[in-house]
Length: 111
Image (cartoon, rainbow, N blue to C red; front, side, top):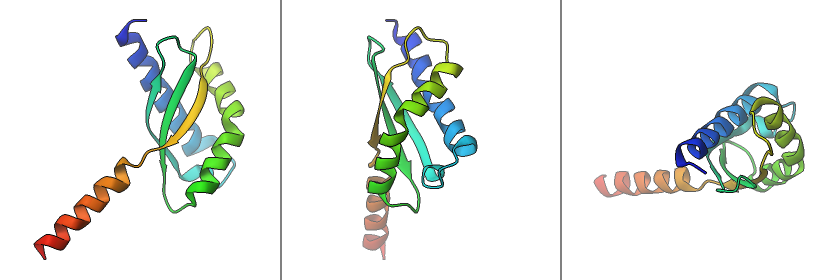
């Protein structure tokens, strides 16, 4: 698979999932989810979806995402033209928390 086409799919998945979470989900827990990146395997069978959430219990959000995988996958299948929609695997993105911790340490040192 061409890298450009794969990157296009990654971006399309991220964009569509953010739209779904931002405007269409009824579940209040999932409204706080923001997709930070998507990495689809070369054979298009799996998609690792990195997310973060604000002001919510991470374990609860993780459970709700697992419970909603089938629904979200079917929504993506309707919106993105692919022969086979990959299975979704949600992974909490800790990079924002890591960056915040570093920023706090720098402020602490400078004080």
